[in-house]
Length: 119
Image (cartoon, rainbow, N blue to C red; front, top):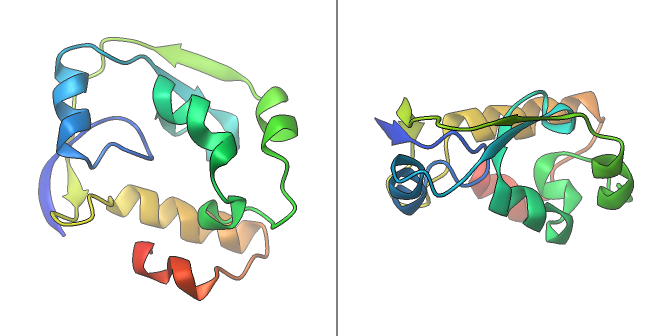
């Protein structure tokens, strides 16, 4: 990991394309309780139900529809990228890795080995 500019989104913020889109104001961001108040961009928020909950450290039978429906969502606009540790190859951020590990511990979930490269 190297220190470089990272977008505000917990999921895709480490992708250089997301940094460009953030600088151009292409996304709005929401602080999501389900993700400990971390920000998700509008695209990742909409796409989250297609994601394996185990990847994020949620229980296997976690229901995204129920979890997101009960969410308080605080919208943010005009955010800028900031310096953060991220992988130059897979675009994963240290912030995302820490969230996944902490959430898995809180949920008493053992992360499947197929997701270990991401944490």
